[in-house]
Image 1 (cartoon, rainbow, N blue to C red):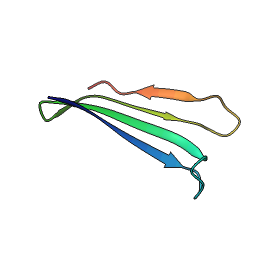
Image 2 (cartoon, rainbow, N blue to C red):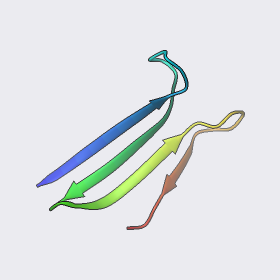
Image 3 (tube, rainbow, N blue to C red):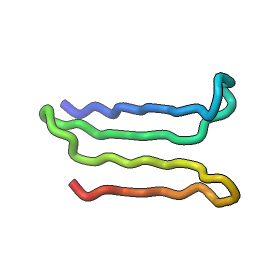
Image 4 (cartoon, one colour):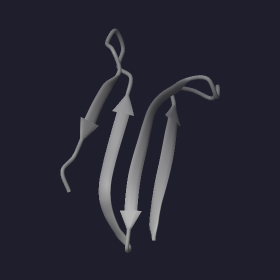
Length: 52
């Protein structure tokens, strides 16, 4: 079975202030991929990927 988990972080208490999102793909009880995307002040969105 494969599952995808998503986590959003906000800059403050407002729902529209999303500043980062993390995604993990899980298969057979193991994380097979994970990514994070975050906004930085005065910069474009940046994407980071870790090798598993």
